[in-house]
View (cartoon, helix red, strand yellow):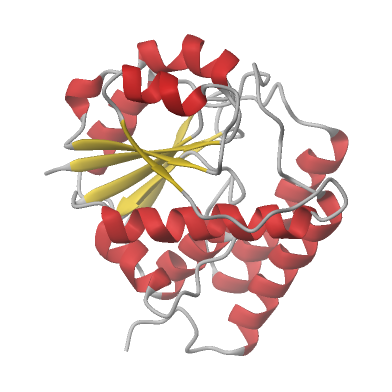
Amino acid sequence: MKFSLIILTYNEIVSSKVIIPKINKSLFHEIIVMDGGSTDGTIEFMRENNIKVIVQQVTKYSWYNIAKRQMNIAKGISLAIKKTTGDYMILFTPDGNMIPEKLQELISTCKQGYDYVCVSRYKDNAKSFDDSLVTAFGNFFFTNLVNILFKANFTDVLGGYKAAKKSLWNYLDKDNDLTISFGTQLAITCAKNNLKYTEIPGDEPKRIGGQSSMNAVINGTIELYTILKSFIFRNLYKFK
């Protein structure tokens, strides 16, 4: 059973120097960095550590046009799906929000036969130390909406620390339909198709470096659209 680790980066040299050395490379069939055009030395640092880097051809954006950056992240994940060759694909960010030591548990849980495993910031005693009132409420609202509409049992739909079978990623991206709301898309697909999924608890530490691409209005709108569209169109995200 082979695991591909996808590290998403954009100008995160400070945090990368702290987090990357903590990753146990022997756990993975391959490690690939999908970089959004870093100019701070992140790309060079990764290559110095013998990690393959793919620099995206991204759409330029400015501080008032965050929507384009959201699209670039989704495009990066889509490209990673096409480039990886493992049985499972795990998303990881080296900004400090994801604890690298949880990777071993994440992989071990996948090996129990799960199609999808999420490191939940809200399961059991786990906690997010990077939450604001807005982001905490957003996850509570959208997670419960998914649970109610699709008869699911998630605690953290919006979290980005996830592993899923490559076949599941391929299914979501088959028509280039993967969006920045990929966490919700994965959860709904699992619920609609009775796939085997679970969550493991894991704290979300405060960010060390880099800047969050999350915008409450933009992300909230995309999440709500994804959920309602999936509920109205019953065959959406449902295997034929």
